[in-house]
Length: 190
Ligand code: ZN
Image 1 (cartoon, rainbow, N blue to C red):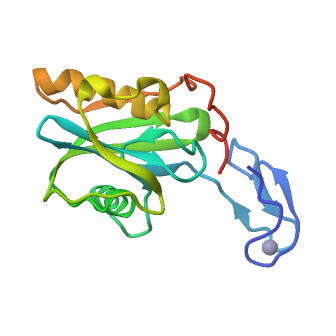
Image 2: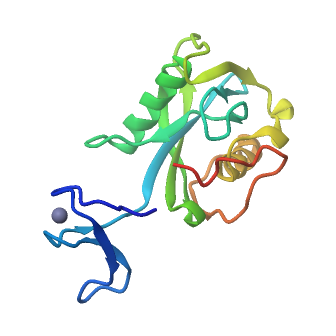
């Protein structure tokens, strides 16, 4: 992604490698401000209740109509776990308890890092929202594997289902894969 105009003075930028740096950056032609761009953190949570997993069908792009666990971009001055709980509430209205780290996922292909937690449903309320077309508790054997939103979600759910039987671990994973199925547009958006 390019930053074409300076965030500070509005002048045009140009691509240059600053002194002592080894990456091309967008540098303001007037005030010389350097516009660094860095990976974004997405935080999310696998919520379990009575052996089932809370899934939400996306009502927003990218990957409209595919299934995911609640997750989204961290806000400033927020912890990763608070962000996961917030995203869960925004997308499903579910409240959660006993939140634990489950995994960290590097998705270098689109410069994102996922922090994924696991938690239990606190109370039985959840519902569709402006961000989710449908929200439901799904038995592991009924997870729509061919209709999941992101490779990272697929990988995390695969391990989660396995570890429901063997005990949970915390893992660091590198995600290189692309989507299964036809609905693969939008992955590189945003
Ligand atoms: Zn400037």
